[in-house]
Length: 237
Image 1 (cartoon, rainbow, N blue to C red):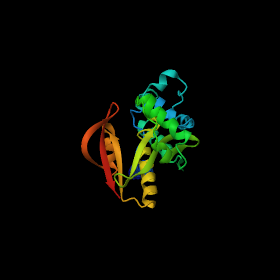
Image 2: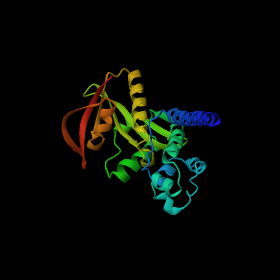
Image 3: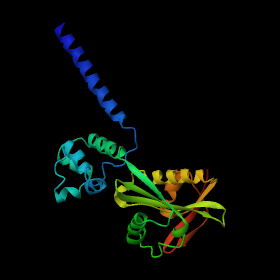
Image 4: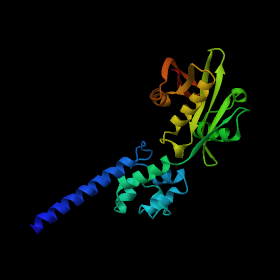
């Protein structure tokens, strides 16, 4: 009889553990922004405090130069830690971060110039990045605290009688975190308030899939803007 009771208690205990584990997984319902293949250096670049999250989970080698080049999965394997558990922790932390978008209507602000210089000029090697449209456009800058990490601009295209979004960029450490979607949703909402019925944009071919995923449709033929292939896209609001 005592053995049966012990077995029942053990089964109940295991059931509770499994339930709590499943509940912990489901508590974080946001989309993953980091994966097991994300490099430690990219994770740390997002926020100085994220190192504390990793340390709290048992990864205490963040100051080691060799650790920065490892993937999260490699680091967890070395320390015999659960990659899935640590992914939940850091993705939940990033999901709860406060990102702020600010709007500028008096020319292109320095913060937007900084992002565009980093992404389009230094990284992608565009030469004619800044133009006269910057003077008439509305500019949007995404901040992580006081750090500019993304941007876009919009203006009314009189020739096509529609609003146009352009120069959308997110700096490298913050990519794959759905921040591009966040910027685009914010700009679209702003243009709706201005009466926009349709939005046009010129997408780099490599970003075509991203814009299609948020409702934009390509039209026309591929063309080149400087050295880079582009495609025209539109979205009806």
